[in-house]
Length: 203
Ligand code: ADP
Image (cartoon, protein in one colour):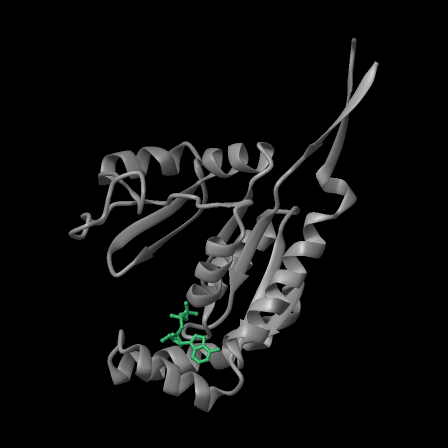
């Protein structure tokens, strides 16, 4: 009789105000750590030029999205600018069971709602070094107009008040330092005994 140790993946929730650098840190982690698998979201918006179905998103119509809602098939879902987005539960479960880690880059509202429903996850809140630095970053990123930037900054002030709801926090001032802190969290979390499942194999 032998024992085989199977390892389960972690669901890593990365959240924080808009512009703090979640996307930047997530890309670095995905590029450097092959144990992370990309969970492909579904969306009802049209594919942009260059976007591939099943790679960037699964592009589905409203009817199919409604069907998935009724079937409670989403881990989380949100409507952004009139388009609907969701993370399919089944895909995430399959990846975690196969030992892959899954990363969700999600806004604080979505993260809090997800953390109320799930019990097994690792959550990291990304903080800006200051609100003035955050304002500069949002302007430099150049994806939002000044009114939208002020709205995001007002949200940011409220969002940081919930920091204690997360397990870890990282201040993204120096990017390399923030990234190495994120890697330390991930590397320690990978070694949790609860992720190691011994299975007795009959000879
Ligand atoms: P989020 O995904 O949290 O909205 P982004 O990853 O888009 O944030 O980052 C917002 C902007 O700040 C981007 O232009 C990015 O290049 C820049 N940025 C990210 N991290 C840092 C950092 N440590 N120092 C300076 N600028 C940064």
